[in-house]
Length: 622
Image (cartoon, rainbow, N blue to C red; front, side, top):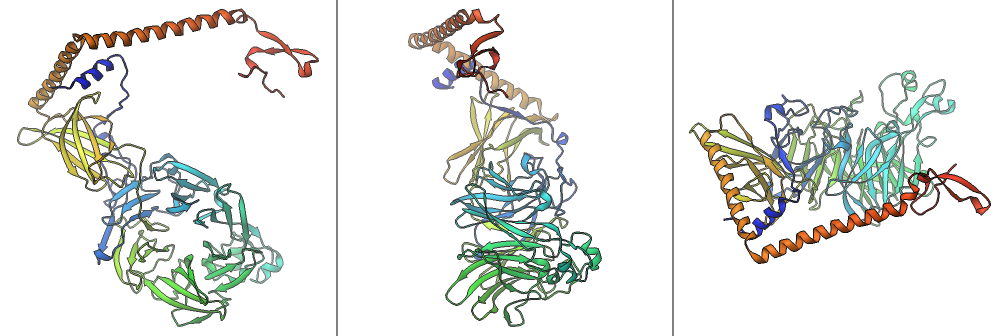
């Protein structure tokens, strides 16, 4: 039987429009997802056919030593991709244990304009936020853990923005980005590489911003400081390079030291630069043609490197880390037998550099990340490496042991950087359900419900409710454990409307789908349809019986009468106020102009009535 309070709500709903949304899905065959539909390396979701998230091939070697957390990845096919019809492009988050999708931002309006890069968690003014660079817009983007836009900073025109880096430093009060400055070098500079003229080249640099005001606090440019002759990029004649904006530096990362100086990585010079935060002069070079350090050990060599980061320091040494790609996509020979993460000790007094620890590519000898990648230190001390190709990533203990590796099954996809973070997401968007009823071989009917909640990290279970169109009657028919991004629930019968409900590990409800209409397959049995119709009719009769019972109750009738009387009095009062307004201002309705004082009261002028502000004065006019 329906409760007294429920009947009361149903009675009032006859006069008050329902605020519950009703979601109805069309047949699946009419809902075509974006992306490459025939690629088995892309996941399909019944509840979210707009998504086509890359699937991972995960290999875990030491499960007890894998750090908890989620993978942050931004897939792409080409680094300059601008295709807006690909739902595998953009920021993605995955479960770090199973490789299951947790959040896809690929179909979010803001991220449909090409690639995003450096997607990760950042400390922004002391608060944990999602951050990334939007390649096609030249924007630094900050999102809340609700996946809503918090802030954007337009760095520059996209062609001048190097989207490798968005690095928040100094407790999130400063942000570092890399920029490209195409210039014509002087003849004197150009002669050093044998070019008779003005060599056109990209003189990269970086900027630091105050994240409160987004004003520039430091702007460094390489022109006049890094020579064309320092480049190790051999991709054609000098004449050809100097006529086509020679990318002789190709910077890809920047970090800040506790003393306020900067580390800056140049891939095409095979060099890490330390730059003064006071006057911008180059303090030293590590690697490349003009290294200021004595390299101790044959393994103290790197090339085409990425992701320079300050790690720690004491009285005698500074510790930094890099990804040593060891090989690029140009003709330069490899400088090591595989790509690797490197932890390097720098003695800046005696100018000695030595290797502390390496983290080898999981493919071993011959395993290279020739394009991009990164090196991250996790909360438990493990090292997380991104290798770019196939979005390959690996996790290692601090002493170098490989505990996990993963890569996309769609080998034509890649990523720039991969990260792993502990994280809790609180999406504003509710769960989404798709419900379909169909006949079974044993002449019965089943309602199958696929449910997902994009970005939710705390769902442990799903409840399934049989309901009615307005959602005001609910019957729990199934509870199951969450199984990946999308979970399937079933009801042994035909439920014309359903609601899916998310619960956390404590059994607390944390989210609900809208009322969702079930798509009934033509093979649904007549008995199931009749049973559903009878159930709905019984509910309607039961509600009417309770409504009549309530109306026969003198106390309830008195309360309803008071409520209706109050509504009528309020409506009468509003009508009276409108009549008074018309009476008071009626004399002005036919008047087009009003005489008002002119400037300083010295003259009067005709002012159209519609040009007056609410405060009573005329609008400013030029």
